[in-house]
Length: 306
Image 1 (tube, rainbow, N blue to C red):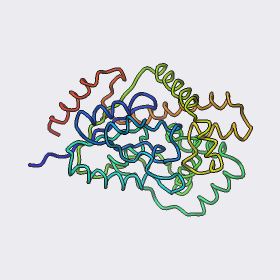
Image 2: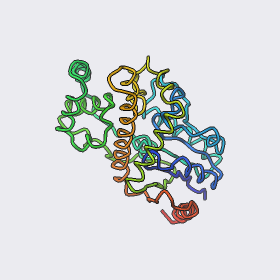
Image 3: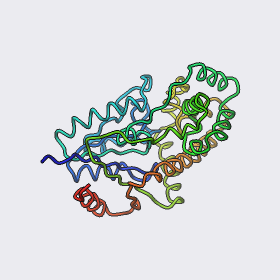
Image 4: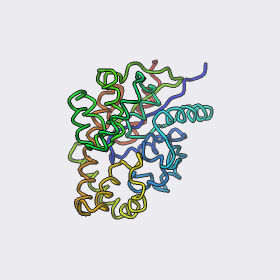
């Protein structure tokens, strides 16, 4: 009897060490890695998205790292389709594949499938876009907070596309956007084991601050300056770029921009934690846990009858 393929998902907040662990697991099982980071897809964004180093990428084969241009339309539905196709291909050669990423929606799309939403009038989106341009994002954020506090706590509030999408469903149906989430998992032909990395909040925040300082030292300012003419693209509504664009606009100083990057990355890490804590299937390990202990957990879990 053929063994059911296994997908190992390595998740957790930004800067916790997912890349290093993912490579260790992939090396241990002689397999390959799929990235589920919604910004590392784009080849124009390297420093600000903490793309794995050349050495890390060479250690094991990686997929969906800088594989597209930010000028191409690419969303979570596209990723679900492409990732499932790649898994089908990889499972012909490997019994185990590793998925690494902190973008919870993208991880869920692969493992569980995307949620379905009712169709609503295009007029609603046009009206919301008009309000965004005339009144700004704050008023839309406030409406979302009032009508769907659950999703308000989870969404990237600075990503106006996601805020507008949620309000589009809310206004069109009269129901919270969050009520349509996680209504039932799609059938997959592989088993899944989740491994989560965690650490004390103060420690995670310190690692974030150090990472941002390193990004600045490595040339994030110059990378953002090259992308500044395209700042309205959805892919660039991203922490690390958004704040530097404000500096280039002259609305804040360089030091303020760096401080805002750190603050907004910490907020992003908190939202990641909120998302992943809802998944009771995740086995959490402190980021200092010896990898041998994590390997043993995976092997035991995979040997246990489902």
